[in-house]
Amino acid sequence: MINKVNIVCFSPTKTSEKISKIIAQGSGIKVSKDLNITHREENYTADKDELTIFAFPVYGGRIPEIAIQRLKKITGNNSPAVLVVVYGNRHYDDALLELQNIVYDQGFKSIAGAAFIGEHSYSTNEYPIAIGRPDKEDIDKALSFGNNIGNLIKNNDTIKELPNLPGKYPYKERSPQPLISPVTIDSKCIKCTTCVTLCPTGAIQIKDMPETNPSLCILCCACIKGCPSNARLNTNDFVLQKQQWLLKNCVTRKEPETFEI
Ligand SMILES: Cc1cc2nc3c(=O)[nH]c(=O)nc-3n(C[C@H](O)[C@H](O)[C@H](O)COP(=O)(O)O)c2cc1C
Image (cartoon, rainbow, N blue to C red):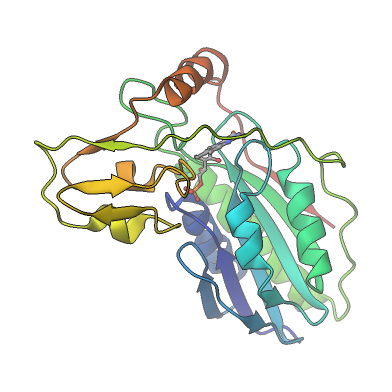
């Protein structure tokens, strides 16, 4: 009998984290382990009486590589899992299928899946993309998805495994990221070190000012969205071109999708 929920998330700008917590709340099952792997690895093996909710952002239609490395420290022991990807209103492409396959290899049985929409990491006031998502409607959908999962678990001793989730294999190729990173506006920086704490890859160090190692930066924008004095921003053409493209092509609201047995 499943009576505990674990949450495993990688969530630099916290939209995946938010959705996973709401789904857990909707299930009505007590949260046992909060395994947030955004900033570190966690070694854990789930028990047979635990349900694990996995929530990850979509980067280039895939699960971010660093998140996969950390995910591989968590094993399932044939326990059930719910798979959630959160994307910035473009598309999730192969990320949900990729997550399903990784989690399967780690010994979990996937029983439900979902793709939700979160404010795009590259969204700014000038280039608003899915701003404010997840919003009230998304939250209601996440609660009701969670509630369905709770009922599924209550009413079935053996739960069937989900068929393949949407996506293609071989997955979409990862496009190489140029050696760039957000910069600091010196006159605004108060050296509070929030950016250092928020960076999931340890790419930022405070020297005289915060300095970012571009070979570690994954452009997640946690340092930009979380800076209390708005001192971090992207000034590179790479992100600018993406922002312009997204604003032209991805403003029509997309809705969450859920996949249940
Ligand atoms: C490097 C990078 C690549 C991204 N690629 C996609 C994508 O392929 N499709 C999409 O819709 N959103 C994409 N996004 C947006 C994120 O998926 C979205 O903002 C998500 O809500 C971030 O999750 P988090 O708040 O949990 O970090 C990308 C964001 C980043 C930083």
